[in-house]
Length: 262
Ligand code: PML
Image (cartoon, rainbow, N blue to C red; front, top):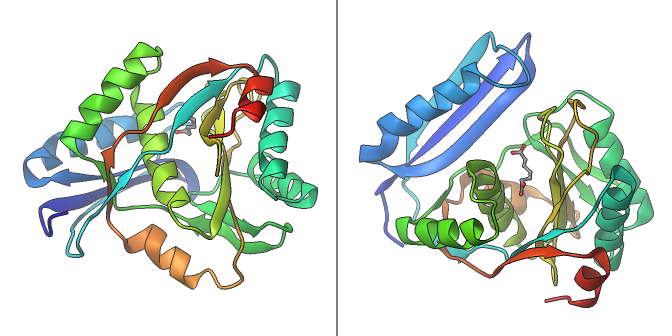
């Protein structure tokens, strides 16, 4: 893809040093103003509280931008927290993640103050990157892919910014071979759908992964390498644009999901 046409815009809002919200994206010069407006509004009206500091940065992209496909998406039919957690565990276990690593991941993201970045664990449960974690940046979507995604998400009733941004981020992360899977639980008290990504499953949305009003959450990347320096460099610095959209399926019962690996 082309060089230098894009800018990376990042926002981070905090209160007393604690994470409130964040956002990042790649955009063209003419769209920067609109994005700044949107990110500022988001920072100042977040469910997690009023920030006392909002940092917004704009950086011109100098590296060539890599075009990638989005992960295939679906939603699994989970009706309560127990079945949501079980489904997340089933996907992760069938992808080679140990029970110890899954327990550690849920503890990291649901038992402590949310961190601005993602934790990294190996598949055995060893923490390779602790707080503040890694923030995945320099991610975006082409205009054409964005309108295809809008159409596909509209057909299944989930065309909203949150799903779109989470799918873009997860697609960049899972692109790296050493990333075996990702677990995400939203830290917004009012948002109870999380997701897991893994080979053969894509991006699986999991409703009721946490109880409403619960203000903890975060992301964990499970990897199969000891040295994560190359991965960190990629996540933070490689500009990536979603340029092709994969299949977006509607709601599947857990059994169908486990029996219909892609
Ligand atoms: C967040 O932005 O709070 C994380 C979103 C996770 C799930 C998004 C979705 O519904 O697919």
